[in-house]
Length: 227
Image (cartoon, rainbow, N blue to C red; front, side, top):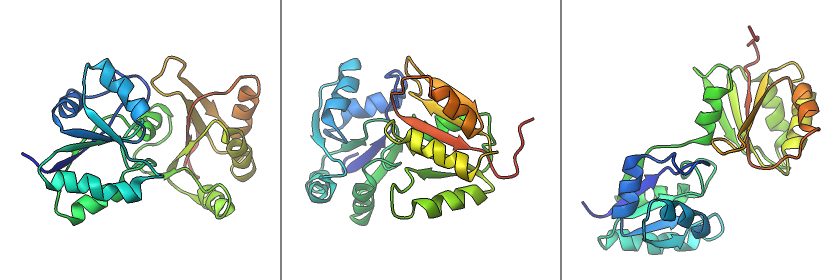
């Protein structure tokens, strides 16, 4: 079947964490739209896949969408991938997917790795009801969002970069000093680490380490107590 946009989840760290179906789709499509071709090429080399790649990221997505859609409408199949995890989840791709649907292009999900679900499952915190905030605002609206987090009755999952994790933890110590959190670093990679405890406890632990990598922070609900 032609004229398909496949949304392919790729590993968040360990290159073995891709499904057999995901590999099959990457081999069979006509071209791959990547967040960064320099990242995706490593995955393709791992599985001996040679395929045309084009970049589609937050900077160029708006003006490249039309050309991608035109190729699909002309009969080609395309796989959309981000650098890690599932496209559209705090990664580029949302606008391409919405535009494809608007043009009646078949959009097919190829599920797989997700940093938020990976962190949630190993956090030790309730996973039956949760919200995903992605990267919270850096300036405008940040204090409002932290106030909302402090009142949230469900588990919360947040993404944060190495450059701002210290700032976030200090804010969580101020807004939710008694809540349990789990801070996950470099998930599925060789140096994967998870710290669990109150914000002040994790701040103390991280102060003794050289911090690198990407982070996922999971925050306990307001009424949850550690057993």
